[in-house]
Length: 296
Figure 1: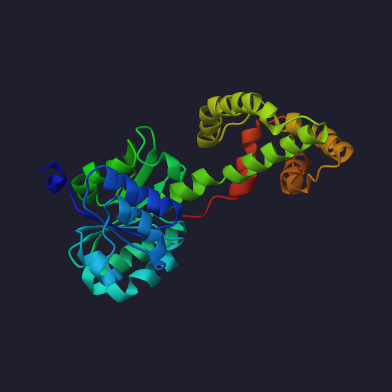
Figure 2: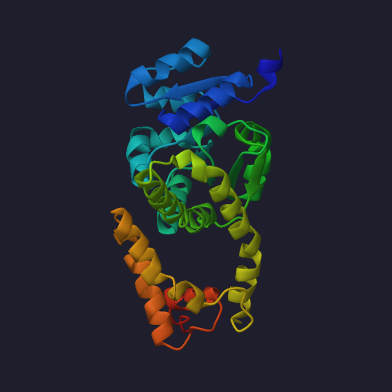
């Protein structure tokens, strides 16, 4: 009886993340239909109780809430094209990568086919889906979000609505995601230095975590400087980072570690010093990245 009261949901796209989404719905008792271009990926979910019809048209028809988890907006459009007419009156939620412009195009396409639309992003790894602290954020019509909120919160307890504009989730996803690869590359370079000395990468982890926690603690201060456009009361200056460039290069060279990935960052610091910004907060690098404000 409990399962009957839970809303039916269809998940399209069964990669690592899509499979995790579908599994969370199945385990929470939602009647769950799944579809993937490669049917073999559906087999483990069917074994747990999901339905896998033979066509995407049947999968869309099975539920009032259709969630896609494909690679890009273009991939989502291509997958949904055969069943576009079947989306009328349903809610489409896209959880994929792409640009804000892509999200706007997706929203217009969905609306043009009579579907209500939410765009979103999962801000964690597949194994975290369904966790009480797992963050997902969405954008689009607030009434639509509120209607499906109990179902969407099955995927993560920290579920947030960013606003009605259809591209906000994509904007946040892009902006929040920027630091990931540089942070990982920094850890990988550090791991290479350790391994060259016969030590383990694991030995770095507790200290790297503390370092990342320190960085997290100063982000509000740096954000305040950026929003105020005030960089003359720094907690760390451009010069502090600039003077470390030769030493960091030398340490990598001595260990035989390739640190060429740093070149763009070093060039940005050199440019800031050349423009007389050395004694300003490191947050002043924002101004160089953002460029001149657009004219009204």
